[in-house]
Every structure is written in structure tokens, then in C-alpha cells.
Amino acid sequence: MKKEMEKAFNKQVNAEMYSSYLYLSMESYFQSISLSGFAAWMRAQVQEELFHGMKMYDYIHERGGKARLESIAKPEEKWETPLVAFEHILAHEQHVTSLINNLIDVALDVRDHAAKAFLDWFITEQVEEEATVGQIVDRLRLIGKDSSGLFLLDTELAKRVFVMPVTK
Ligand code: MG
Image 1: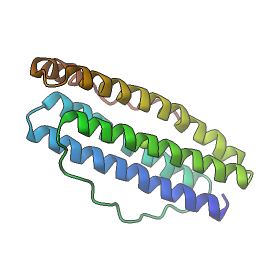
Image 2: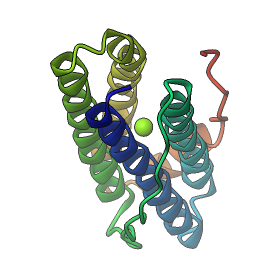
Image 3: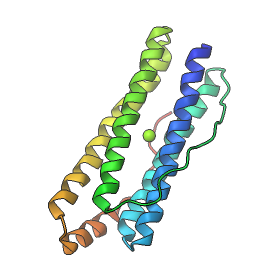
């Protein structure tokens, strides 16, 4: 793997680890306001982001590179409402999508078609991520200040469990 590609992958490992850290902070926020279903959903999200980071990390080594770990930024700790938290997730995932797109630009620049093929999985994953989170944002907007709607959604989100995707 070319140095430029390796550097870009390493940056993305950090971005995925930061995502995991941000969602862990959100899990703690939801625990603190006793929305345990939202917290459980967030725990699955934490594991998913860790999986993304590790998938990139392993790929760097698979291609003969070296993973280099940088500091992970401190995430925010508090959000005004569950809606504000989910709007934050949506904006963050849109940002991550742009980072993956940039990574593919680098892969194409250095003619690393293997890396491009590897990154296609992430592109599909981001479409799913944005759709899922976007739907929750919409529902939270509909719910507004109706606490019974919020508790219903909490019960539904509690059902999410992280399933390790079957990929190489
Ligand atoms: Mg991710």
C-alpha cells in the first residue's frame, strides 16, 4: 500500500474510533436520563463503530502497512434533548460519509483499485447508517414533547442488538 493511502486509512481508523467514543458518550447521556432503550441502541452503535475501525485497522496490515494510533478527541457529554442528540448523529454520519468519499478519491488518485473495492462496503454501510438515523430523527420530530411517544420509541430501540456483519 502506498504511503499516502496508508496515511489516509490511518486517519479513518481514528475517525471511526472517535465515532465509537462519541456514541459511548451518548449512551452515558441516555443512561443519565433513564432512557435505557436509547442507551441500548447506542451501545450497539458503539460496537458497530469499533467494528468499522478494526476492519480498517486489519486492512492496513493486510496490505503490508502499519496502523498508527493517534489521540482520540474528547466527545461532547450532554445534549439538550434526544432529538438534538440524534440530529448530531445524523450530521456526524454525513461527515463520515464525506471522509469515506475522500478516502476513495485518494485510492483512485494512487490507482489503488483494491482499496477502492474494500471501501465500497463502507459506502453501502453509510447509506444504511444515514437512512436509519434519519428515520429516528423524523420520528423524534413527530413525537415532539409527547412523552408516551418517546417511551414507545425507547421500547422499540431497546430491541437493537449488534450483529457482527459477515464480511472479510
Ligand atoms: Mg462508521
